Length: 441
Ligand code: JFZ
Image 1 (cartoon, rainbow, N blue to C red):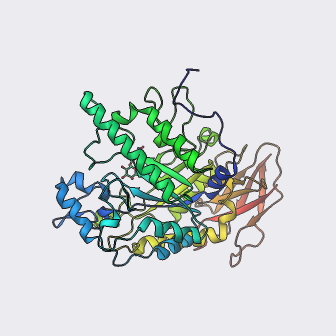
Image 2: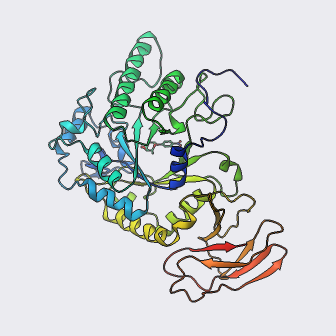
Image 3: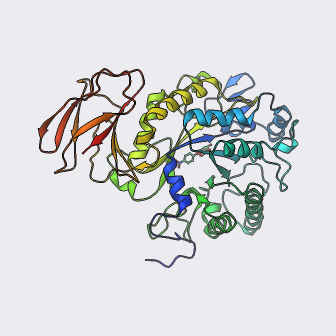
């Protein structure tokens, strides 16, 4: 083991109440909202087929024109309560919002820059309104913060000389002040999700990422911080030079999930974040994005996939420039949420089912407190039957379909194929989405 000053602070997952709460959430709502919601992927009449939040870079928009968008950010149709209702509809237990994305625009009235919501026509503290609305519904709020800042004069991608070092030291001081400000203004925040930490400049300042984590944990008891913040003494990111996870959970699964048969990921906490269109976090109005929206059952599959390996699933929403949620995204939230309303028992508070092999037709999940094992059938085989392989020596006594009302089978017939291997007749698909069985063993 190397002696690291800024490496991981522990070897095993956290087991305190705040961490257990975060771990049990399993389903979260990610929100990317900022000035990029106004052009929504289109500039001067042309669709720019790239993530909408990258528009100023990809379309090489002059800085003054990007900043002028703040005058159009009128919040004509913004209501924090309605956003929070969509999270309830989705069945999300937490929400993570972009307080500042790469363009530097802040959703709260920051004392350390002029580029913020307070200097738009409404002058409202959007972040404060959202924290209040979500927490009133029992939904935990986490803050996304981009360390990368395209606008700040002291930001550097690389540190080439003394002048760069001096400038970047000022930048890190600015970002620290903003983070202290967020922690002080919104002390009920439950977690921080850092982004934009991949550049050489940040990697050369692992001490700062360590200091940020320490500062937040001192000010906000129980606060949960993602691994993407961190770099160690040698610039190793997420995982330190001794192979230990930094921060409280691994956050590298961005628009991808771990292989479902790779049981090793269940050894630590993690979260995957996912867009609804193929590749945009901010709202993108063009067919490039709108023709690629995920089907709600694909989202359900991903939720079960993550749960089965002990991870959380953070589904992203990109509200529009006027402040309204995109109807197609609200519709997906409703459908997924209805499924969770019936089958949430197999998701919330559940995790990796030790001893159960990846079944191919879906996932096994296990309630972390009761030990109840569930079979979530997201990929029903054409035969209409699944092969249910239990841990060696275990007996199948029966299967209870969750929300079985209206399904043709009350009792699901099963037969033994061999030893602990059984075959179950699903009795036909339903329009209510993937079937879930509580297994009696
Ligand atoms: C970053 C941002 O650039 C993007 O706009 C969005 O906010 C997303 C959630 O995070 O994008 C990433 C971050 C990490 C990886 C890829 C894209 N990664 O680890 O592969």
